Image (cartoon, rainbow, N blue to C red; front, top):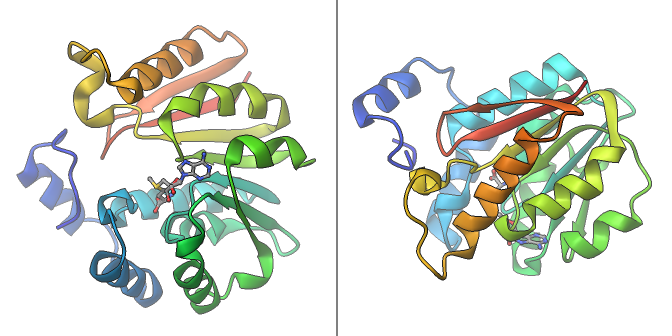
Length: 217
Ligand SMILES: C[S@@+](CC[C@H](N)C(=O)[O-])C[C@H]1O[C@@H](n2cnc3c(N)ncnc32)[C@H](O)[C@@H]1O
């Protein structure tokens, strides 16, 4: 069974897994290889979250997608599902050691030609991109979530959507914050900032580790 982040009762989680379509062979191979070969496989999107991203992408039919935090490209492949014929997905990853596995699976998924993998710090790369985004998936360092949001909201298409992962942070957002816990503090500040931004409509989808969905109004 996939990582649950302990937010949902494990039997309910299992039931959900059993009633979600199976992932295709490429995604399953990537899931297996990431767990066998790559450090911190807990960071990988699971089958349920991947299916959710695929469905959102098919609904939005994006021309431009931006992902922050590629890791091994599981979510990249899912997000690309509904990409228009001349569409592009840009994905930013700071860890160059992941390059081989990322490229291998982008090729296996048949999306290498419409994916730009940008290695480096997302904070430095985002200002160099001159695009309007139909889907933005924020899944990199938590301490910059608010900065990513402020930089990217002006570049979100009118009918576009921002998805920010891990906004429930294993439930720590409702607990007493430990003094040096910068990530929880940052996630809480991000969630409050979005909630108080009257230029958007937002909701937290409480599955897996929580996904904040944001659209312009
Ligand atoms: C949670 S993982 C992404 C998981 C992936 N999106 C998925 O769902 O399978 C976070 C990734 O963000 C990368 N990352 C963290 N901070 C970053 C930064 N400032 N710029 C670019 N990438 C960053 C990490 O190296 C890691 O691979």
